[in-house]
Each structure stands twice: as C-alpha cells, then as structure tokens.
Image (spheres, helix red, strand yellow):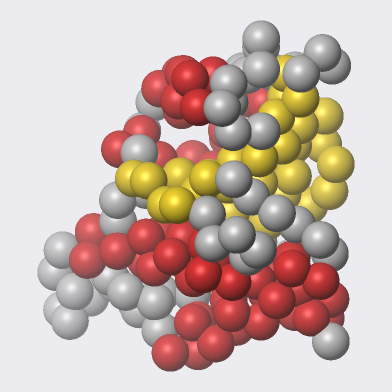
Length: 169
C-alpha cells in the first residue's frame, strides 16, 4: 500500500428497542447499559493505542451518540461529522467517496454505522463475498490505500464488544 488509511468500522452500541416509545426509528437512543458498555469498549480501544483523526457517523441518534462517546474517549478528541450515506440503506459508493476525499487529510478514520450495511461495506472493502458480521459495539480495522479507498483493503483486526471491554481491564 502506497498511502494507507486506517478505517475503524464501528457498529453503534446497544440502543432502545423499536416500538411505541420510539415511533421514529431514527431517534432511538442508546440505553444506559449500552452507554456504559460502550465507554468501557472505548477504554479498551484506547489501551490498544487506537487513535483516530476524524469520526464519521450516521445521522441516526444511536450512531451519533456512539460516535460522540468514541471521540470523547480517544486521544486528541477527534471531530465528529455526520455522513448521510452511513444511515441504513446508504450507498457504499458515497461512503468510499467520502473516504477518498477525507483520506487525503486524515489517515485514521472511524465510521459509525448500522448492520447490515456496515458488514456489507467491510466485505466490499475486503473484496469478499457476503458480509462481515458486527455485534452492537463491535469494531473492525481495515486498511485501504488513499488511491483506491474502495478496496481491496487489508483486514488488521475485528473485535467483539466483549474483547474490547476485556482490553480495558
């Protein structure tokens, strides 16, 4: 790889259940337990020396909350920007265009999104078939080249929320 970009694909943390309390799915927040677990996961990322220059997030409430907690818990407190294409059903091509545009200035990007889109994006970046499964609060690092942000990328690691929390100690 000539000029690598570290991509950290992050599925949002545990959110409130769909139902009458949240008739607009876009507004479902993280649960108190989801917030606590995600904070511990972020501590695990920090203990693994993960650093991010910019956090891109779906505009949905649960993803934005996950992104804000991630940024607050990492060194340098990176900025958070909403990217409409990270919302459910967003176009993967729009996401790779954002990676190409932003990757010229930021070499470490976190993308916070939803399943199944996030898993499909991971597979696309790896030029694999199917989908890479993400648990809520799971994180996967894939390196891509700034010249070819749509892949093929290199899978560096993929961690479940439980493993991230164990890294925190």
